[in-house]
Image (cartoon, rainbow over all chains, first blue to last red; front, side, top):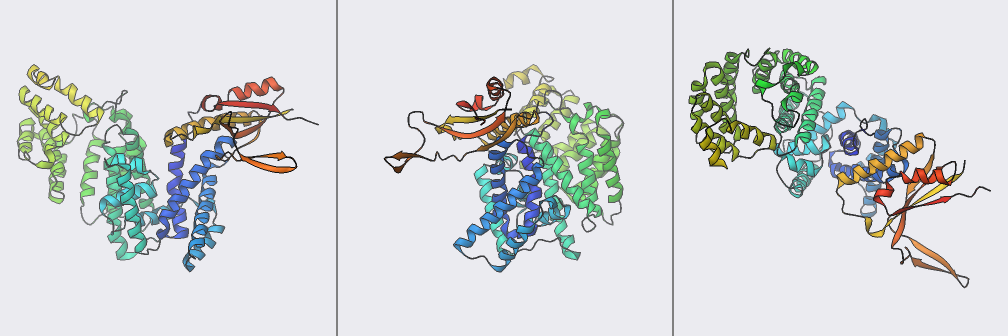
Length: 421
Length: 116
């Protein structure tokens, strides 16, 4: 009966970021906390009132008006305690006349992103604040994405917002050289939003898809604003589109993992792929090759291969080698080794993997052990493959990943199976 | 068409510690019922009442005496109301019986508005 109607929480989340961006433009970034409280007040009021009156004709406008009024209430309450400074007086005046139809302007969202991704905040705080203020996720949802408690997330966000308030920022989209410097922060936050969403933490597939969709929405806003539509922005957009196009085929009917090799390429989202390649062309206007360009290039090689077997592994090895130069992280090196295994055979890939043995970060990273297990299995070294897969199972995993590894483990020797049970 | 008042009684201790997802889900059910009833041309209005039970005024020998609600014996208060129109009392009861409050509240009092 209610299939076509979005769950209230989804409706609220989608509107929260837009209303917040609109009110931040009117009241200034220093009032971010008050604004978020006002938006929450509006949602509580909606829950109480809609229950008895049914769905309003225009729910989004209803919420925007309610949030505006709640923000005014809160400002007035403060006046009783201590008089507002002239800026707040002016803001309250503007607020009273603000048109709720004006929510959802991309420029407001962009300006709010520049606030959330202020260099005074750490990378993690920038991403958290983007998730909260721009995307409308609550502390509980953010906590799940960061494997933290909601209380800890709330604390960090409160402190981050206090720091921003003390900076007395104005809400605007920076220009010129300042813009170039600040844009990197935005791209990084969207990248983290996306990659964090791409491999979901424990049991959070839905949240992950929402995060990918948000990353796509935000990068699209950047691509459509002349000041932020740089080649690197287009590279990020290409990367997100080309990966996101595969979302539907990445999990099976029961939520199990479907590897790239087995994905039904006919079901990849053709519209998103076309968009991705369009962004990639615009990314090529760059004067310098960035890590994002290479990652987008890698995604494009996969996206344009007619089948897994026909993948251009040589090109991937080439891209990964260049990426290792720019971004020599263990995870990039791991992927470079996997590409080499496909291009030159499992023995060559395994040799490159063994160089990474003993890396502390990879020792707790399931894909490293899973890749070793896979290559050892291809080389018919079943006992060692079983050991590697058992090590993978010791790492943090979500349910689908665990199931996949258990299936893989069954292909190994009986001794490996017994060792685990 | 006659009008009916649906008084939604609920246990006083209801203000549960339900998580936000449950609250949103339950609200959605009430909204769906309200939307359906309105689309059928039957819902005329409705409101939530504040959670505090209010006071009860009595005339005691010409003086107004106020005591705290709710009635101690029932430990229940009216949490909200709907005003609906229906062909007769039986139809009003049928509409009310589909209201999710039958699941989440204690009971619904159905009263016909007297037309003079």
